[in-house]
Image (cartoon, rainbow, N blue to C red; front, top):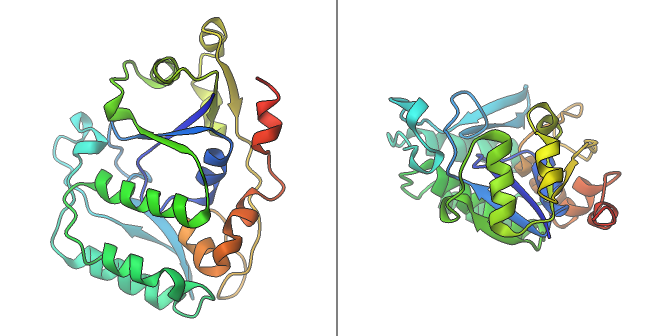
Length: 238
């Protein structure tokens, strides 16, 4: 069984979904430390003046001791209104905006308390809308132990995985020998970012998945996997 996982992220970039396509099971990692100024609570979309951040405000007190599943949103009401208005302003003329607009409007009318709950709700919508059929699990329900490389290894053991798909940066911290000794193979994603039709001048890469979804709709999956490794390819390494 091929496993991958990723920290709870707000409106993730398209490379994450390619990583999930390569796996049988995706683990939603909500039981790791909340990272300030990371992608846990923010991502970029494209406007007429270029890319800009959409950031969900999170209480930062004691953040070094805060797990992602416990990170609380600062609910002053303004962030959700701003994010919805930004999506409308930037994408209302995109070919497939109206196809998904009601879902996002409802998201930003909901009173979210925890960041992880918001991110998980969005993640499940993206997986379903894109058409990615993968078994789903949550780290907080698996009693995973350890940190960094050891944490991923324990995740593999708890789920009986025979391979784990890391992002490209995983090679910076993974102890490959430990995985080999445990009989678990590793694969490091090397993602080639595709180009696709966007609104406004020029092409901007590494944006939120919403940019691709609003512009390409049902073709989203074909676009994000184009010219990249496939499940069939890496499964031959098992």
